[in-house]
Length: 258
Ligand SMILES: NC(=O)c1ccc[n+]([C@@H]2O[C@H](COP(=O)([O-])OP(=O)(O)OC[C@H]3O[C@@H](n4cnc5c(N)ncnc54)[C@H](O)[C@@H]3O)[C@@H](O)[C@H]2O)c1
Image 1 (spheres, rainbow, N blue to C red):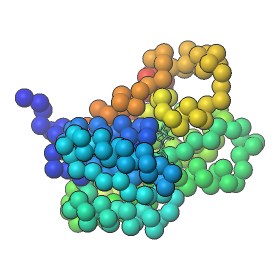
Image 2: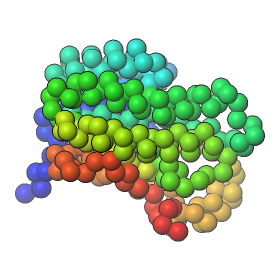
Image 3: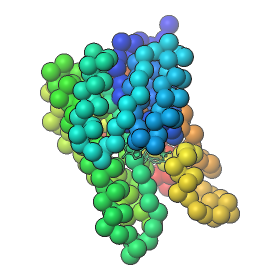
């Protein structure tokens, strides 16, 4: 018989930015573990989000797709209220929506800086706040922030991104301290390089440069697949993780072990 502490039957999850990439894999993975899962994305990602909704429904779980730009606080608040109204509760929030801009520090504009910090850090905070308003009265919640291995080690040409993910790691600890008294745990996952549409689009390096980078930094010897993050998310989303809070779980193919 499977270990029941990892079973998410009866739980309701929301994954931000889940039309594709890591968010899609986590939304489907949480559904495979038993949760009903609300999918959300930008307007441009809604067609993909509907496809993810259909994948979740094919698993026999309930799903819906919501437009939710995590840079717009009103849209966050409205979206989370709709999830609670339509699904009856919210147990698990995965703050996955994020962007990257690869550029030398001297070339970062104010617009670049604001877009990255606003999506990755501010969005994570205000989604967590909106979710906690529902989780606190129910006395239970699981918040999982998708940080990066670059929350703890530097990446060249990633000033705003590394600052945003370091901020997410710190925020994870603060919210963990504040909300554990309400039965809410707040943890983060730090993925290493993972093959997603966003990563591929942002990477202008040649295959040779990429090979050199992976050989130098990635003991795993390849980029990760989004599905390789699902087990970590299911654990942190599960009842069995009730004493695990404020933790950054690095899943990076050994990148930071060097
Ligand atoms: N792929 C990697 O190598 C890697 C490594 C470490 C951390 N991460 C983090 O994982 C998360 C997902 O990355 P990915 O590689 O799957 O990216 P991706 O670009 O493939 O997918 C990101 C999704 O987020 C959505 N999104 C972007 N801005 C949004 C906003 N303002 N509001 C709502 N949705 C928004 C996009 O539309 C897209 O569907 C990000 O937080 C990223 O920083 C990725």
